[in-house]
Image (tube, rainbow, N blue to C red; front, side, top):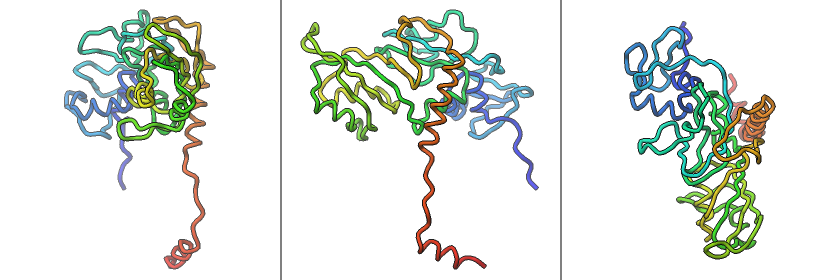
Length: 274
């Protein structure tokens, strides 16, 4: 009789400690940046006990989890959505002046984009929020060059080709139109359920209306029009619960529906019975 594997998967230990998302933790492990009791562990699925083992990332001890933090930040432009930047540009972590817990960004916002961003040290929730199949809504207000007509808005809603793959259906509406510094401009409200790199910018480019300014105004059920750029706050218990409900609904909606077997399949199944 084989014994049950002991310990916790290393990628979960790292994510739970708030050092990276679970997916990013897998990359850290494969790159040989994680050690357990002084030995490099690069095989996914490896386990360890955070209370008994000396688990380190880049030579630093992986801390045990204390208080869970769920933060909402209004990211300004010219700030990197990352914990560290090799080019030493300002990151979202530089804005968290009194946060002691080791939180990390959930998803991304481009350097030149602004708006709402979640940060947490809850690795399980972060993994669910960023998983492609959960399809959490993200709402953007996008100022573009030119004024998109009905045809352009329908193309955005149906999906456009971005890097050889069509984007998922979205919701697009024109909020305002007017004269900008360099010609006519429009503001489009765009709701998407994907998180591909620079997706909104690529979508707008595809319909002939490049982005002038991009701002995220809602993440699932979370929004806060009063939160000023560069400021952050803790989510309320109700907001955290709403995020969990949104993820749970998305999981249920994406569960495959069992199909009834065909008569031929039923016949094959009967013929296999002893």
